[in-house]
Image (cartoon, rainbow, N blue to C red; front, side, top):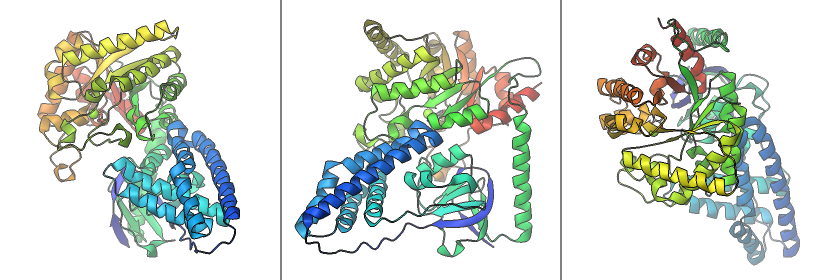
Length: 537
Ligand code: PEP
Ligand code: MG
């Protein structure tokens, strides 16, 4: 038995057989071609075929993971059509009189190296994409099939990293977990694991020898146990059975009200990052969406999403939720969420820097585009909008002026919109201290405990070294929550919690007693929190 450690990006227990996915090492030979024109025609045909494959993958991904998850294949189509990319390949074919496969492989290396040396994290990740499209092109040229997974036993996929096209092509029926050496918490692997509700680990240093062996993934501890001893396996089988039993038991709470024994109703909403999470929202019977992190929509794009692109996504969420509340948070980038095309400068202290509403109030063009899309979508459901990282009443007043301009523009254009509740996130100590004044300006508060803890305790939430003292249960944080609830109510605003603490079952009773109106948690936490609230005396 051997235990390996990684970083869990989604919890759970999985038991299965390891399947290491190796990128095919394609031996792309360099060969001389006499007829250069014929070779360029070969390339042209291969590009058309690869483009066709990507179109089909987009359609498949759209059904499996929704529009935002499928968008990567549109990005791949764009990269494939990129003039610089194609010209580089053609140039190598013509000047060196070589085969198209070789020219594609060289271009892939050059472009990937260029992306990899960029400072921007988003652009760095594009190196993997350019390799992905080039491999596809080489496959078409050599008529090779990519390695696909058609596992018929419970399988743990282990890989260096997983590209979106690899995961979409996979037959995932028997996939029980993903483990990768690279990737980040926001990687496609993590998003997919969350969507499929299977545990996933990243940053795990595996060795090839484990291929085909039986193993356990502990997505709570972040471990991969290869060839477990009998007693360890029995222990985990019991744990997995308990997890499953808990899950089934909780299913009975579907369709039931989230109400305390004393008859107090709490709104129990879900946090989502995109349209792909909606299936899980519905499956777990959330009463609404309390936090749609709209920045994921921007993160998945190569360029600013247009008003129409955004509108379609917001409308689709509103329609799917069929009259239930959908609270969408406006763009919250900066700090850990960097987007290359925004061209933001590197900062000494990004968590306290140019981020979220601070960017929106300077780049009002971007802000207005998003607000127009949101208001247009409000004609199709019950939309609420909230603004992140607020520190002053002036900011809120400025936001409201911009909102009015946007509404007026829509009216002038004859475009319908509905009634929209406006709220602010309370995630800075400043917002807590002025919450009474803020309450007079808005319809609701949503407490972002992840950032509120970071700013109250002066502990960077990304710093793994400080994980042990990043204490969201600190009395200072809990007192602030109480203060915000009281001040919100005094000023006529309802108050929810959308940070991770909202799903902390050890605090559910406390929050109910404090008078919280809404809790917004990740979809898989809905039913456990409902159970806790229904037990509250
Ligand atoms: C928070 O800060 O608690 C929050 C919900 O927002 P995010 O985690 O996206 O910063
Ligand atoms: Mg936050």
